[in-house]
Image 1 (tube, rainbow, N blue to C red):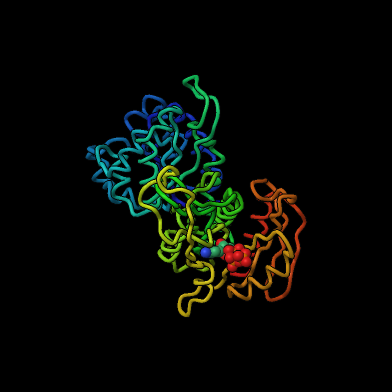
Image 2 (spheres, rainbow, N blue to C red):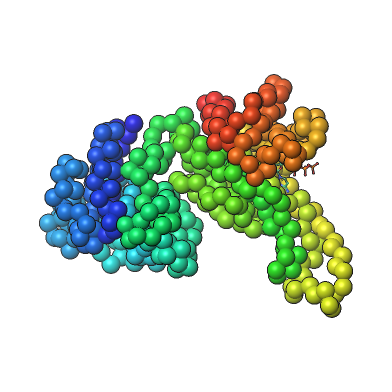
Amino acid sequence: MLSGRHILLIIGGGIAAYKSLDLIRRLRERGATVTPVLTRAGEEFVTPLSVSALAGRKVYRDLFDLTDEAEMGHIQLSRVADLVVVAPATADLMGRMAQGLASDLASTLLLATDTPVLIAPAMNVRMWEHPATRRNLARLEEDGVARVGPNDGDMACGEYGPGRMAEPLEIVAAIEARLGDGPLKGRRILVTSGPTHEPIDPVRYIANRSSGAQGTALASALAALGAEVAFVTGPAEVPPPAGVEVVRVDTAREMREAVMAALPVDAGVFAAAVADWRMKQESPRKLKKSRDGLPVLEFAENPDILREVAQMAEGRPRLVIGFAAETDDVQANAEAKRARKGCDWIVANDVSPASGVMGGSENAVTIIDDAGAESWPRMGKDMVARRLAERIAGTLA
Ligand code: CTP
């Protein structure tokens, strides 16, 4: 439910704007107040009248509308809401947000606001994949802008691929995750995920088979229970979830820095498969077999991020959770690892090739804590994530 919540909805100029009419309806059904802002381009797709009729209030359109400025200045308008939602967020609007431009009412509101922002991008697949949009998106993520979608699918322009705006109910779910009264509301949780890449030379690196699926599902499940999630991810195969603060890193040392910068948190979940070793000396130039012969790789130990956080004398998260990917003696190894690292729980799983867990969609985990070991049956990684998120919520309550 979203009763008493106030959403400032900016409708950009894309064909998906028609879905925003339904979004307004869905939000109001759940008790939210929606203040709509329609861009000039948005007006080409939906009429101000239909927007204001569905919202049950005035639609704001022009920065220089003096009546509005007298009624409610744009600064104030940008701050009355609990959340600013941009749907559809067009390539142009995202570009202007990333650049900090204030060229119309929508972009001025976005620059003036100190309220969290959620975007639902919608555009042609080529535009979505264009390096300029990638850059803008990365910058917006760095700025803490949350995102839902886009989805893959047939597009109005006749092409197929990512670029379709998320469906209204998906956007509602992302809004509820941020504003709803889930059991983790008000809690900040750090999740590390994915592998790390440790460079050997400018073209080669050491990595592992982690896809990032379990960590991503966990971050998503925690956000769905209302947590504010800081998601620190190595170069994973699966894209990061919507509605979380994403920090992308490559190496273990970068991951450590990002983790320290994300503190303090109520709980830290260390699902990343951090490389234990890096090159003692990374070669600044590509190693050549003709010149260098058979290379001898000398290793150095990476910082153990989980252990460092679990053993912090000051500012330690209340709950520190490690993962143990083992190929044999799973429980015994995991129990020893829990003691060695000093974390509260270890989520142990068998990653031997026969288990199919690494890179697969299912997982069978054993949770080890002070009370002993609890083995869960094999289930989808999403389900493991949901149950873990609920267990975390129960412990932090
Ligand atoms: N971890 C970490 N930083 C590292 C290595 C691991 O934060 N440099 C975290 C992982 O995210 C995971 C747990 O520690 O939560 C797994 O540790 P792992 O590397 O498997 O354990 P090790 O102590 O290296 O033990 P072993 O090599 O015997 O498996």
